[in-house]
Image (tube, rainbow, N blue to C red; front, side, top):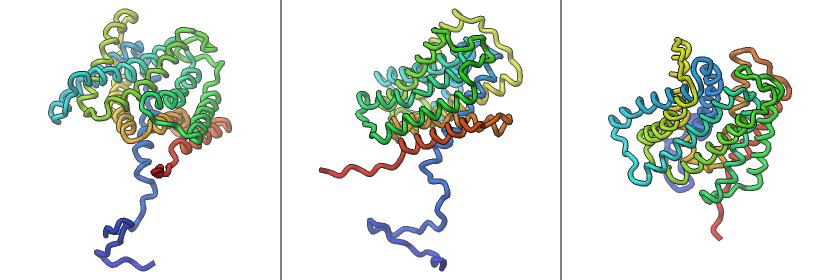
Length: 327
């Protein structure tokens, strides 16, 4: 292939002359943010499980939310971020309570009560299906039949991964409920699923124009308020301040609460609700792969099949769709 002369231009379909792309990227740019989000979000489960022995769940979240709010306040002020006003403050606060306090609080407390990780993950894994059902009445987004197929395949893949990794009769290391039969714990998992699905839709419906820096301050302060009431009422609030716990807290604050959550909101702004929600199907397979690479955990044939199904499901949901022709 002959090299193109320096300074040569190529003509685009719309008539513009632009420099050619000599070496196309092996990884499409539109996949970079979703891939990074899945990777970062997948680390949250491992870090959370490792941190719960050092602090009770609501106390853990109280500290996490307070640190995030304290860090993001000067970032917003120094950066000149626009602050939400009027009713928009309430909208942003609602998202914070749903996604941070509702989702994280429900999962943290459920696992601490002994709900097996496989059971809680499978319940929360229904989030993309629930979010797709909520999307049309709340935002007007419609889910195509092939996308519904992808959502069902993705959920089946998550079920296979979770059943293989944890089993539904295994005793969780943080509790003694072998079958996940605690009604309150199961209810908390269901609450968490509804909270993150509704919070994500609410974010897209009302808060897409909010500055992420000031929005984070409002959201985490709003999520902190119920923790300030519930943690002293229900827990001892004892914390074991070890270097290990501090490192985990740094990771959860900077990488998860600031990095991954901000990426989630960026993806919600850019894409359809069902497309973004389907990415959560890739979290359990990615976590299983991390366990294999970092801790030597076994990847069974069922786990691999579940990974494939989840990936196929996400691909179907996010496949490029031709624009509608006027008509």
